[in-house]
Length: 534
Image 1 (cartoon, helix red, strand yellow):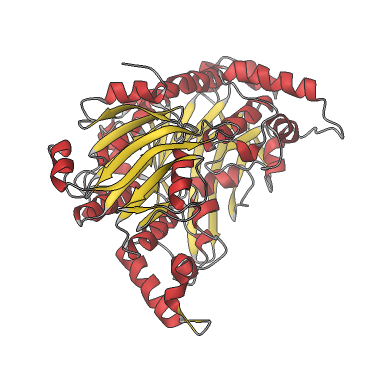
Image 2: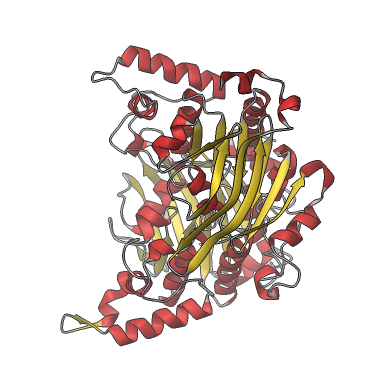
């Protein structure tokens, strides 16, 4: 197969490197993928778009062997292949960088790459492994300590390790699931240069993303899925954002789901602004008029861990009824801040005062609910049912004499599922069976049901499709309009600007920029994310 990669990419465009024919996959009564035909060419970057639950991830999981197709065929470089497991996919030189990493927490970066290579020796040559990490790091313009353990890495660095592993295996088909979700705007360009280089070398790159700007910046082809079916494949140069947007969420769709998304949005393809109450014209004035601080963080300090910066003399205030955005590249203190406010990390210095009450170490901030950034590890028990997950943090309200009042739990869970339009077969279904967007809506519904006075949302829309992201942001804005305050922590600058009244830029554990008019200060905030001044 080496000749496939050595030929000129322009010649390769005639024959697909990957061809899917009539691929179908069901989960019980749910037809997740229905008769999909897809051709992906070497030397080209192929964007795959669609709402959560549209079938994108399921289709790519079939290609990577995580799910077996119920019917249909897969061809690689013109040959029919049978892919029953990731091992089979790797043997065909297919790699997938997942939205939620598949790394082993106890291993180091060097050990992870050696394991991923498929040729792990009984004894690892640490010097050789470290040199390999350094070589791949230079190729990808990344600096990673080969001896750092995965459990000590930020989400961003975990994703980068998986990209290193894909390149190390010399994969010829690389599937990237939301690869820029954890990058600052200034880092996206270098990643795109890397992706273009991979394609220029004859590889086929499949990019799953919800960011319309990225699709038109880097892709050569676009495929749109909806309700398990492939509805269109277009050459990027021959279409436009409005037409693609209408394929993802047709104009005839439920107006509440799609209202507000703009094809020219610079971040996710969010239709958010019209779907929620309008942001006040003068956010700074509103903050002052709303008056009293509800959250005061003073001189907060958390020691750094491997791959993270910790917090350094962090001071800021959230006022009543406002949404305060904190923007930063992952690993610059956002995770530590959320953990302190959730009561799972003890600061070494500083104080948190919420609604006039000082936070007790290792207890949540008073009257505060934290929506964590990793819904799989920190928010849900995936093998529990939806109604069990819904009542889990407030179980005491549904128990009497040690027994759970199941009828009440089911009633309230079903009401939340209806209110938040969570797509699931029933409240009794396992949460694992839902798409990421619907899982996140369940987490949000559970948080709002507790009627918090302050909501801390950490990367609450990461990996969500346009409709689900817009719904989450609308609900947060609704909560603020009804008197709650929101601390919105994110890594997508355009999204944070879109939803927030004020924005702070966090770098190296400290606030480096602040704006009460973030739309006008985008460049300064973007520079602050990487420690520069605009």
